[in-house]
Length: 200
Image (cartoon, rainbow, N blue to C red; front, top):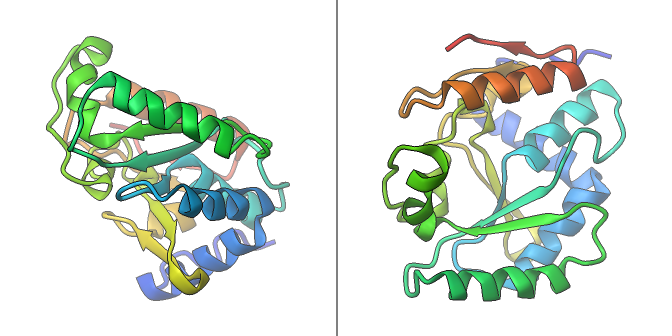
């Protein structure tokens, strides 16, 4: 199996390959359909459920392998209270209860409020889910997908898709997230030995 067969291709061809892989993955496709039904502002499924599914498909591993949860971003600046986000999280828990993986829902407009307490440093106030992707510790992980009308997929990848299809985890030095980059890289190499991690 040539797991690197999409490496180095133009973005449009890689995006088409990504869409085909996600359509064929029963867990992720159902998550995308359910996420669309939840109709959150600027909602998109991001990160591990997307790139892990690509690696699973291209290495012959089963759907869901190595995926801890499904991250669902939304961005709603109209109410930044914990209570408003918690209400969405509780609604989502019922909405996604038939999925075999847990779904973690987070309002990206609120991240700057709790980020310093959790990580010991500040982060900007994100204005969109796409903007939040640009601050991930690894460029490879910065990918989001949403299911739009006519069952088409919109792909958001601020750093492109070549790292994913090249099985390469590349640091994103916009913030000092070196420990997260290292830890996620080590975990990925255990699950997908084909992965190469570029040092910080």
